[in-house]
Length: 128
Image 1 (cartoon, rainbow, N blue to C red):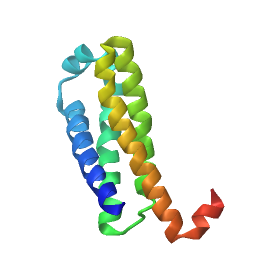
Image 2: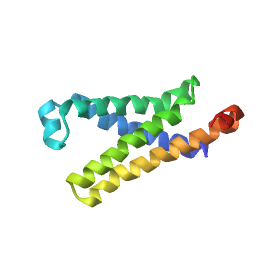
Image 3: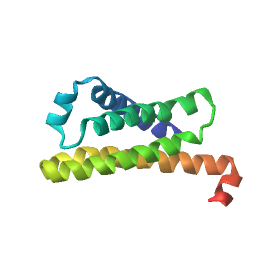
């Protein structure tokens, strides 16, 4: 299970680093031409995606606060829910499968990491 989680985390981190980085680097006019959202909001989403990508990898890699990984994955699930809704509203329904699948993979990481953390630290299970 751990190998599957690390593989999915790595792939998701690469995806979110790329997409979030593009939202931070592209000119504002180009961003607003592609999406029906305000430019600053798209930049905020890009920043959240880049930070979420770091949150998927760094806590487990450096063994500092590994409980942040499921929180980062849950935040990325929320972003992907919004991306799915916007894609459904503005584009073809088949294109909405891409953010839907990425969101499901992020949900898999959030659930898997939370379950592993609750097995290692039983106090987390009682607090939830």
